[in-house]
Image (cartoon, rainbow, N blue to C red; front, side, top):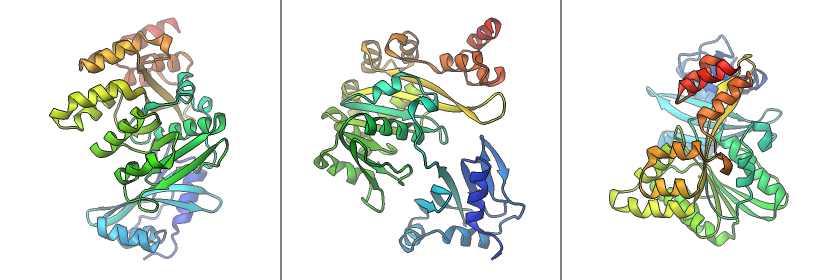
Length: 356
């Protein structure tokens, strides 16, 4: 092993350069994702043994044992002066490799993220299911954290989060916030959700709805008078509904659609697009709020018509990706090419270009 390399140094360089993630791969330089692009943080190429030892150096004994048993590990890492990181260790071609996501110390406010105003209104809900969806690295966790912090500072209650791992750490303000980590505080999402209703929650945060049992428990909790905030990995609002329904066997899908019609309150889909001036990324959002038109599309399984319902639902705070993209382009925050790339209807961006 090369004793001259230090994982803390690599993490520090990632943070210093404004990076979101550090990638440690055998046979590669340590790479940071900065504004969406991968850049090296050191010239030295890591051999397999060095890469393994660097990653093992931040494991606790129990984490090391779990990793060697399952070959996968999600974990949190706290580094003095740098803050928290979400780590994922895994094998690739028999080599131990890892990715570390930097979690800022400060929890951003909703308006700082550039989210539509209706997202703040969703935080005032007393019950129902609100889903934040998007691809990996689109800022879902940060949006959820901002929503939880808004609730925490605006009303009293009990917020219980189930996370894998814990990322943002919340202080108690008007709410008592109980953060439970998979593998440390509870065995699994389904196990935690089976007991959460006996813990007197007002708000339940689920860091990811990964499987049928977790999705089912989240919907049930939302139906029984709790506000449930959760994430999914899909590209937009209609695909989030598709994903939930398709997680269930065909003979249960009718029942789940009926339950969703009652429980679902909104879906916030988001992307992070590079700024036109090259200084970072900006949030592009799509918001679907449940109204009579959307519920009708859901119950009749006319998912392809939901985008049209969002288009005409501006009075309910709804917004499509196309509307968001055009707004960002009109404000000169993203380039024309980026706008066209992310629009369902490029013609709408062309019309905006003419007006601009």
